[in-house]
Each structure stands twice: as structure tokens, then as C-alpha cells.
Image (cartoon, rainbow, N blue to C red):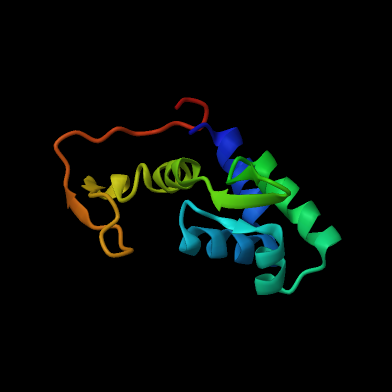
Length: 123
């Protein structure tokens, strides 16, 4: 993931209602929820919900799916995992260790054989 994509995703999540929507969709799984179900759960008016969903689709955090007259939204797990990977890519690098993938919600440091440092302008 590039820095610009990460900034867009984080900006989209930096709002209480959008964060609640995203967490809800992550919990539901790939089948997603209809707009009405999301609205009922987060207690948001349809017009406001439409705005928030548009922002999150633009950031590629959620994906819409048309099913008849209804639109269902689901979390984009690949984008979510890309963002988590971007945020933890150089975890503990200054201490000369690297981290295993997230284990039970924690970044677990392990001895590094080779540390890849990231500069501000290079991926």
C-alpha cells in the first residue's frame, strides 16, 4: 500500500459514524449488510448514511453489491489488511527486531535476520 492510499483510508475512518459502520461490516463478514440494516444499526438517517458510505467506497474500504432493488455493502478485507500491514510494516525496526504477523491482536517482536527500513519517500 502506498502512503496516499493509507492516508485516504485513515481519513475515511477518522469519523465516529464511519468507524462504527466499518467495524460493523468487518464483524458481519463478506455477505455484508443492506443500507437499511446498516442505518438501523448505527442509527443514522439515510441521507447521512449515503454520504458516509460514499466516502468509504471512495477510500476502497467497503464494496457495494447490487442485489435486486437493494444495495449491500461489505468490508474490503484486502484493503483492510493492506492498511494494517502498512501501519505495522516496520514495527520494532529501531530495536533491531521484526514482528511476526499480528497474533491475537498484538504485534509480537522476534529477532530479525534482516531489517528492511522504510524511508519517507520510498515504498
